[in-house]
Image (cartoon, rainbow, N blue to C red; front, side, top):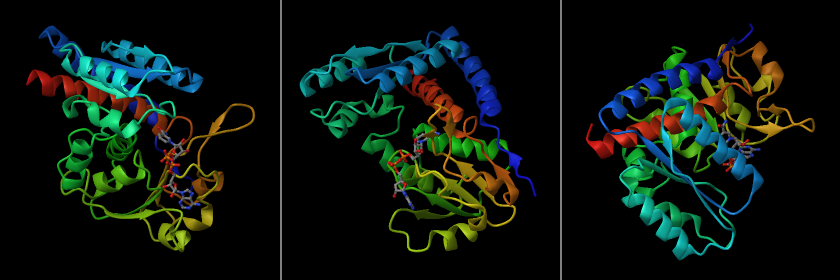
Length: 287
Ligand code: NAD
């Protein structure tokens, strides 16, 4: 069997088209969505990410209100800036680009964001809502995974899903999202991590495996049930600069579906931030 392609690039392009339509409709009613990315310090990768997010916004008509702050910014100054953005009616969504410089408290900054503007979905209110089973904003990568499954006609209801990785950004919220009661949920989820005793025993029994460990080759052909769906969230960089995932190449010989890296989950992550920003604009406008 050769696995069918879970095409994140094409799906993200279609989603962006839909989002652009929604942005135009909101703008026509005077509710143009706006995203504020707060970047502290001069980490080159963070600058590349934030520039990319602002370009993505521009392409669909979302306004950008980026704030670049110097490395020596104090916690108080950071909170003042978040307060200002919280109060600005033109700003629908706020993100604090991570990592923050070491002297700053990331959790305190995340908690300072108005939960209605928390488009990264990392405020305890939004995490709590997801845990409670009525998500409002879900972090972009897990949301992107769910949309990829839905748009490829892969029904997770009743499926055995194994997720490798229990991070705050990916594995943990995804486990909650896919097991929620309701559309796009109802899966039976197993969350694996570094202390899992027999990873292969879990993955071999799974209908769907999501790999988000940051460990190249952690999922190999012999660990996958024939016909299973494999989503590769991992991003690793080769010496020549090219990107590759966590899933070994030969998995495609047994899996039924497989997402590539690049061109799988990555473009969906970028697009779901735009989706959350549009949702925030609607929520704030009552539209
Ligand atoms: P993380 O380092 O915070 O978490 C990794 C998780 O994997 C941990 O929970 C750990 O327990 C688990 N893990 C590590 N080694 C393991 C092993 N040998 N066996 C079982 N579990 C193991 O990372 P993260 O932020 O969740 O990111 C994971 C990967 O996904 C990274 O490669 C990252 O670059 C990538 N990522 C991609 C996107 C995207 O849009 N495609 C978004 C976020 C993260």
